[in-house]
Length: 93
Image (cartoon, rainbow, N blue to C red; front, side, top):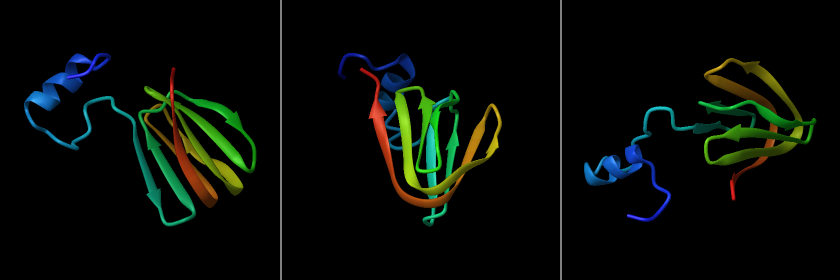
C-alpha cells in the first residue's frame, strides 16, 4: 500500500474489490463521441466551446472537442455534449 491512499481505498484493496468504485469516488463515462457523464464532481473550473475542465476529488477531468456545452449539472452529475475529441485526467499535485 502506497502513501496517500485513503482509508476507503486501503479497505477496498484489502477486501479485493478490484475496480468497483468507492462511495463518493468520481466516475467518468464516455458515451460514443458526443457525450460525457461525470458523477461526484466539484464543479466546472474552466469552460469554453473547445475545452471544459471539471473538478473531481483527485484533480480535474479535461474534456476537449468542438461545440462543447454543459447540458445538465446537478450536485451529483454533470453531462457534457458536443464532438468529443479527448478526455484526460489531470492529477492534483
